[in-house]
Image 1: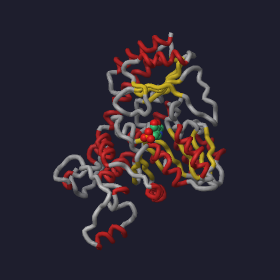
Image 2: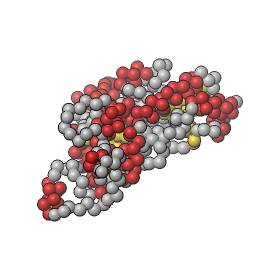
Image 3: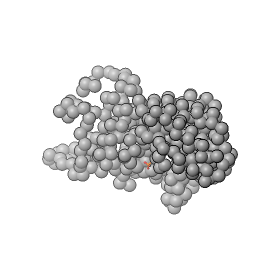
Image 4: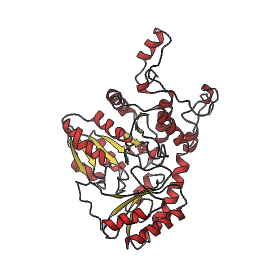
Amino acid sequence: MKNDERPRNFKQDTLLTHVGRNPEANHGVVNPPVYHASTILSKDMAEWEAKRAAPPFTTIRYGLHGTPGTFALEELLARIEGGYRAMLMSSGLAAVTAPLQALLGAGDHCLMVDSAYGPARNFCDGILKKCGVETTYYDPLIGDGIAALMRPNTRVVYCESTGSLTFEIQDIPAIARVAHRHGAKVLMDNTWGTPYLFRSFEHGVDVSIHAATKYICGHSDVMLGAVITNEESFLPVRTAVAQIGHSAAPDDVFFALRGMRTLSVRLERHQKNAMQVARWLQAHPAVSRVLYPALPEDPGHEIWKRDFLGACGLFGFVLKPVAKEAVYAFIDALDLFGIGASWGGFESLIQPSYPQRTAQRWAAEGPLVRVHIGLEDPQDLIADLAQGLERLR
Ligand SMILES: Cc1ncc(COP(=O)(O)O)c(C=O)c1O
């Protein structure tokens, strides 16, 4: 994309390829160079003063607050999801906690989805409680029924769709309408949807949270968090992020920017492979049900189809009742599925899952398993699962 002001109306895949890089300013180099920096020098006092006088978070003045690479990735993330601006930090968990810290204080009330990523719950029950914030957990399928839980001091409604481990799709527009009527902000962990598959700001989200560690980086070798906000929420959240001292390492930012270039093609293949594996699992006699909203039989399918532009490769399945030892024997027998935390890389993963619930009991008929379907040939993954599931007997 040339450096000029001509009006442009490029589609998402074109933006993924061209936004956040500027070859003309970098000797023609395609990717922005990595700047390792703490001190950023000013050439004289006039420049020093100009940087101090500039609107906050718009200039490169100290490594903590971002290098050119940081600004480039932030620009691309915000553009793809349709937000105002983005900010980066060293992990997805930091991206979860920083906006909560920014927008809640003593005496406030937070509505937190019961299917949230476990450490998000821990933060509410630990640090936020110590700071005088009360949290109520709500059913992910509550929709506009959230109105009954709103209090005059409810400042934040926190969503995560799909839900961690259990993959419920939330009716975000319905929740957002109620939250906004009561003057509360809607925060959403959009890691599953990525900035590409769920354009959260079109559905009423104020602050979108990403573990960029997952699909944004996409290669299982980086820890990174990103928060994207609408205009109104930007300064309060960005200021808190600066006050806490969050920052992102330049090499990790570089990898994330590189990951973004192939995000849409990777996601397309993850979804295609995951659909094949999910359908095969649905038909397997040892499997009770598959939790993947891209399947027409999934209870969240209609809302997913309405709001999302696709699905990623992460889903769950419930086995028919069987002993824990048998589940472990099945997982241990697998050849291609790694046993490990995280997801969103190019490789397949598996783990048994134990949802934490307080609003409602998680009552499944059998053990729950989470899989991340990678970019391997799905026929090989299916054959591997077939031989592993033989061990259940
Ligand atoms: C939905 C979700 N949000 C946030 C995180 C935290 O990301 P990180 O591991 O980068 O701290 C994870 C990690 O697994 C996650 O699954």
